[in-house]
Image (cartoon, rainbow, N blue to C red; front, side, top):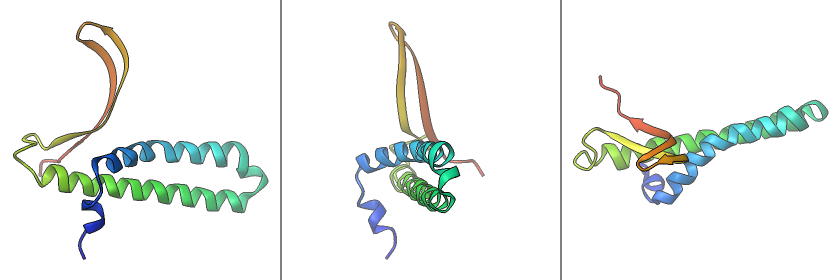
Amino acid sequence: MGNSFITSLSGQAHICAAYALLLLPFFSFLLNGLWLGRKYPRASAWSATALMGGALIAALVLALGYRDEVLGHPGDFPSRTAMAWEHTWMRLGTGMEADCRLSMRQAKL
């Protein structure tokens, strides 16, 4: 069977998984920590479990996508690094900008 589901995903799905990995724990805090937790503890536990399960699935999609797309093509990525997410916060002038990056790199053994 292998990972046919993961390899059939497009690059757009990997971008969505990167955003989901960043946002799902935040939404879990907002929903459970600020609103649902004190009033309905059982519902809070179930929603936290579901949101963290979604974050786990997003992490698996990113990890398997990195293995297939970056490690599977060493000629395209000689440093074994891929940019999963990049956002420019401010442009400070010509050729200068403040940005945030989430990169994936293979560990040297």
